[in-house]
Image 1 (cartoon, rainbow, N blue to C red):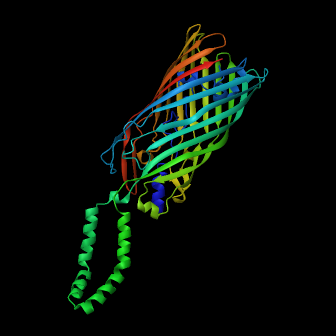
Image 2 (image 1 turned 180 degrees about the vertical axis):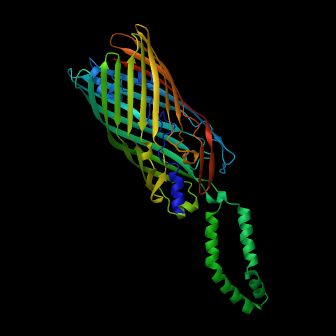
Image 3 (image 1 turned 30 degrees about the vertical axis):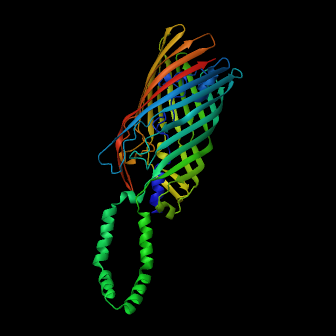
Length: 476
């Protein structure tokens, strides 16, 4: 039972970034830069502003002067769940589970000479929020989520020759998590009248009522000592039945709050930029795995008796969360003096996330199964210099789903294939200052879910799961 309890808690407590503007897995793509306007197409080969410090540090070799790029990006999600009639948990569909998530980005690049350049970026690599109603059918998996993951990434680049540049960096990543869920109460899942009737029937079918009836017919001097002995013999069984009855009484559900859960983790990134001619550029980037080993507070309230009996108390919680290796390859082509085309292909190794380790006051460490698969990213974009100071952008991107089927999808991290449609504009305010404004519509799919635990079944899909990212940036 203790292991089943741990699994119920763990099923809603880990890897909780589904509401973020993520790639096929959990990585954020919208980074408050002008690249949003092309759905990130050409990100590793573009190399026109300081954002290349994050996208591909090798691109800093193209910059002729120090540059800053600052961006702000409101991100709004619209998330609504559609319950299927096969769901056995009581409760509603969770209402509007989405909300507002602010995002910031800061990028800097500085050429040192005609060979070397330094730079840095501070961006949110992952983040999001889910806030379903507390009485929804999936409340034993999640009732609230808020997550932020930031990366400070200093980088360096070196121009080998006229057509080849290299870049590398080391990132310090900070992740923090707040998460809530409900604890089921056993008595709420039991038909109390049927239970009492079953116990009474068992007692009636036993020889005990007949024995007591016969004893009551004896003279008092003989009857009373016998009844006293019978009561003494039955006292432990009665006490045990009363204890079980208390555990099985209906009542309020328990609440779990995981707060101040955080960790720092390091990873590195590499980049190559190839410029075979003036109108063509090719870029490839690699980011290594980020391995968060998060620690924080585990608090419980309104605790049902069965959990107290199992020793569940306030304490510490530990969770290991991994963001895997990824590779992006990009191409940029200046088709004419006013039109440019760009594209991406990428791969993320989500198959490395077979399970999520969790340990805490519920007992020994467990491994929450995930069994994800690798994802692929594709994007295509274009830019048109409509006027000397106005650049128009558009793009589309597609990411494959990391989940195998609805039985491997959980409401703490609903995932599916993703489509992005973007448009933007960049205005050259002056020779040094450029202002970018873009919008991205994200279709996160339907994320079908069919999962069961010791208390019931949750089945359905997200009839609406979309995001809206609006980025305003200034480069100078």
